[in-house]
Image 1 (cartoon, rainbow, N blue to C red):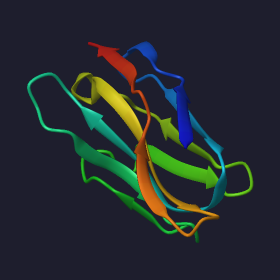
Image 2: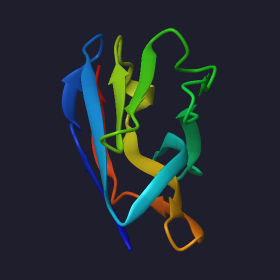
Image 3: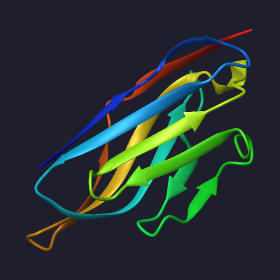
Image 4: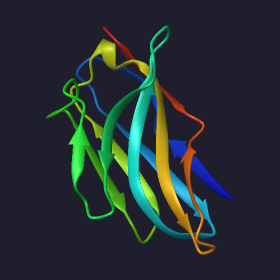
Length: 120
């Protein structure tokens, strides 16, 4: 079993910054792709940014150049630096990890979500 613990959400004014963190714990051998998703009220969950174990990144067009995703493979940790925040970035942000276990099993896990609210 794996636990994903997120932190760093909150209320910020437009133009401000926040840094989200996600820490994975459990009997983990390696983690493949890691990512951040978000879901605004009345909308579907969408990919914000993803990063492979090798460090290749992918961003939604709406956040490219404003957000930066990073990870530490040794610590099973993931971050999202969010700059120049806009009211439309308001959503619950979820951490996502594709985990390989020592048993040979592989499973995707989601964090509990952290609220980000950007006021205009």
